[in-house]
Image 1 (cartoon, rainbow, N blue to C red):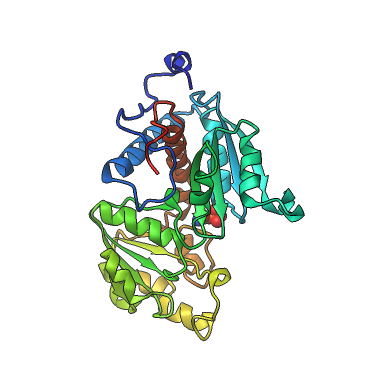
Image 2 (cartoon, protein in one colour):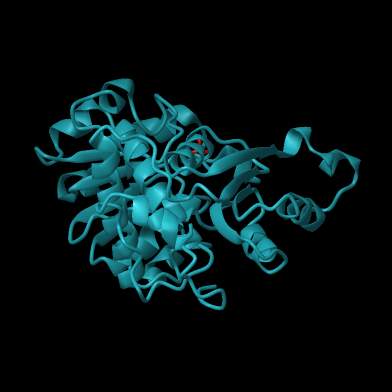
Length: 319
Ligand code: CP
């Protein structure tokens, strides 16, 4: 965005903090509390702007955002696409399954080829941890991690300051668990990770979280339950005898809801597997904010795109 374009925008467009110098968003692990707070505050302001009925701004009208997805997505891809368009950017979509990767093109050549079409910002998802970091070292454009294997998914992190939050399920294989833990701990939440021992290593304690294998003991203590999918596609061995047994011990269902706090919030990064980590009555019930997360995710991604794309950012800064 040039300054002339900025002058035409209404005053309620959130300003980029003068100290913001992050060029890429690759993880939440390296984010400071100030950076997390800036993203959340900016998201809150963008949500107010778009809730007022103004769906499309023009603050990124000279930017091209590429959604570069090597792995399937419903929420993240659509959300980044909508967020970029609401800021006025052009969006190009890349899908690995219909690309020249099948003809032997390398990952880095693919990224450089997309960048050569004057793309300013890439949103990258890949099943291999570290892919966004690798590409950020090989392209000049800004880059956002939209999920790299089990490593991180920084725009899917949580923000419940000072509360007790349990992440329940397949913690070991979950990128959203990692991104949530880094962000939530920095914001002062008490975080519990809970699930079967085959999916919740005691080593998680080293990140300052409580580890529990007893969901029934955890439920009454929580302000928020974040129910994670069993990520069979990332597992090499079956982690429990049957889905039925898993659901018996760890699914959030109406019996467990009776023992939860009256104002418990039920969250899930999605996609949800009904009848596995959550029963339909809970997923669709009054305590569920799962679809609100999807809606609010657009504002979070608008904030990240706006901050990362801001021309005042120091190209040497951040990661
Ligand atoms: N939570 C999440 O990343 O969903 P998608 O895989 O549908 O993008």
